[in-house]
Structures are given as structure tokens and as C-alpha cells.
Image 1 (cartoon, rainbow, N blue to C red):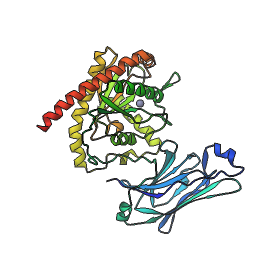
Image 2: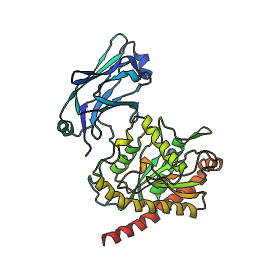
Image 3: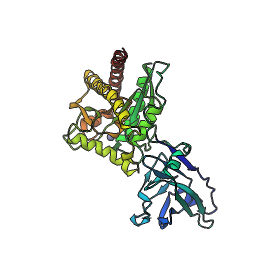
Image 4: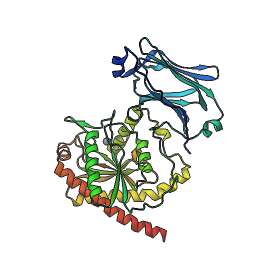
Length: 403
Ligand SMILES: [Zn+2]
């Protein structure tokens, strides 16, 4: 099970006289005065900041990590020489949750935060962060209370936690996942970004679904901010989603892609273009400091396999229903619209998930369609009807399984 330990909560920052102008600029982490080094048995992290910013520190298991979040800093001046510690396996920096910049220290052995503090220079407003990590027993690391700083969102919660009394309102909870966002705009063409287009598409689709009276809807992001792929699953699961739809409008090399395409998860991609597409989506997370390798659902493999065994055919039926619905509406489909690839965002073991390329931003006709509100309305109605068809068939199937 995944546990997290709160070690230190946000520091409140007082505005210093003379530093007001600096506070509007993004704080920078300076190479000079920053280092990560072993100090006997302990590991000491020093970070020099151009100005004080709120920060928080917490630790995570599987794999063991110390996470530092700052609101916000520019990491670009830190260089490879910064890490001189044997106690740290790797250091990643990038964007974290909305409004936070993150440093992730992957621990070679279990360590706890023995000291965490920020000193501010009263004359120039600069700040120095010091973190001291000391070795602890594995059990001590694991046994810390599972409390995170307010607002921190965790990687996926294990399958089987709080398993799922049926919803009392009888509504189908749909998780809509507008692809990309924040530092990751997705595909860009003609001044349009995939992230923005898919956010407005998802918001419109939410209205269409809600108006039918059959659905409840949650969005994995409601603005232009970065949400990691595992977090998207976590958010859907926290909302007890019955079904997960990731919405995209990617760009591929000319001639490769045109028309709506529906993907389900598979280790083997349907073709090279699909494989490249799934890899490109992981890359944005890696850049943002998200450790996808450690982020598969943290339960015993055998349990995961059992859950996947049940979920995979339901996801497949979902994708088939979507393709059939889009076809019925006379909207353009890719010549081979049902594909598979290793999209990390489809890895929820317990929620039937599909990724819809509503169209490809790299294709002139698709791009025009995506920008046309009437076209979008037809596509959104097609998705609504497909979801209803699927839910009905899924209920029948579930009844048969129970008998
Ligand atoms: Zn995309």
C-alpha cells in the first residue's frame, strides 16, 4: 500500500521591504549555494533561492522518495554537479501540481527528514533552504502516518480500497480527461493548442452528458494546468468514476492520421504511429518530474491482473461503442479507428478507460471540424449516445456475471 508521511507544512512568507518587486518574478534556484551531499550517515540538501517562497516537504513510498514543492521556482540553473550524494539515487525537478515546482529525491535507502528550514536574508530577500535526512529502519519509514500537506494529490490509490457500493442516484459517473495542460500544451497548430481545445470540448461534453439526466461528470482538470497521468486516474477514482474518457486532438506526421480514433490500453501497439503517440504522452510527465515507472497501481500484481482481466473486455466494449456511435453520426473516422497502445493514462485497473482522438490537429479538415461548434455538438451527442449504449450492455453483462 502506498503511504505518505507529512514532514513539514507550508511556511508563510512575509513580504520584506525592498523585496516587493522581486516577489513578482519567479524565484530562481541558484547553482551557487545549492548542493546535495552526504554528511556522515546523513544526507544534506542546501538550496539557494533568489527569494523566499512557500514550500512543503513530504515523503512517499514505492519507490521511497522525498518530495519538495515550492510555490514556484525556476530550476534551470541547477546543474549535474549539484548532486554529490550516494544516499540519493536520482534527482528530478520540474512542475508539480498546479502552482507548485517540484524536486523529487529518490532514496537509495529509507531516510527521514530530521531537519527542514528556510532562512531569509533580510537585506536582499534571498533565501536558503536546508533539509537534513537521516537513516531510519524501513518499518519506521513505512509506519509514518498517512497525511499529506493540504492540496497535495497522490499517485493512484490501490484497487480495492473503499470498493464501491453502487451509487445511490443510479447515475453513471463519467470521468472526462482533457489531455495535456499547463507546461504541456499538447499539439500546436495555427495558434491552437490541443490542451485548450480539449478543455473546452470536455466542458461542452459535460453539459451534454448532464442534460441527458443519466450521467454525473467530473473533469480531471478544469483549467490550463498540468496534471500528471497517474493523478488523472487518481482523481477519477476518488470521484468513483464508472468510466474514464481521455480526450485528445494530437498531431501526427502528414498523411498518417485523419478522423476520430479510439484507443484502449495494450502492451503491444497497433502500429508504430500509435506507439509513438503513447510515448509522446509519457514524455511530458517525465519532463515534469513524474516517475511513471513507479506509478502503476501499487497493489500485488496478482490482484491487478485479476482486476484488469475483468476491466479489459469492458474497456474494449466501450471503445467499440464509441466507434459505432461516431460512425452512426456520419462523422469522419480514421480508416482504422479501433487501436491499442500503451497510454499510461488508461492504466486504471478497475475503471474501463478509452482514449479518443476526437480528430487530429495536424489534419486541415479535422482542425476545421474541431473549431466548428456545430460539428463538436454532433460529436458530443455521438459520445453521449455511445456511453448510454455501452452502459446498458455493461449492465446486462454484469447481471449475467452475477448469476
Ligand atoms: Zn494528446
